[in-house]
Image (cartoon, rainbow, N blue to C red):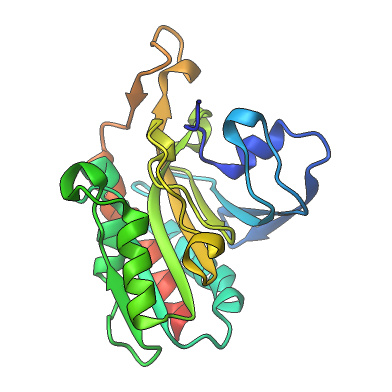
Length: 247
């Protein structure tokens, strides 16, 4: 099964009558696309759960435009604030392999959050099955059972099939996530059904698959050569946005 196309908007674009979509400008360089699906949508090999999805599209490069990071941070905060609401106990999970640069977005983002904050913020970096021998969902579920958070926010690297969205989008979903889906290695999902608490996710498409690029095999995964700069740049912007939303 091909489960690699992780941007929900890309699944939605192929689903007839999936949901109503709302477009809104934010600042000078951002556009937010929001849609709510009343039922699961998308092709069988990229099925999406019902719920709300927000895609922040960047009109510019985060490495080249100094103030675009500020806009991303403010936009992430604006979208997450009503989702968090009055929930006090928050568990932030950094998904992915922290030893691989392209997969370290989650760990780098949550590592800058103020654990033990007044919202009773806890931070977890479960790593990946290949390193720990444990499913991320198993580790997260155990921590959720122990500390009983009101909500989980998970950050992860995503994939795209459109070059113009590579490193130029941020996705926020209110329906959970399946770690590893971006590289065809889909694991058990983190969701309300598996954890028993609401799960919100934040991700950036830092990967693209060869099927979208002429002359490359479909099973090839590519990342921009400046990936070691993109990861910390997005981590800082998203981390600041999460922290602001928590306050």
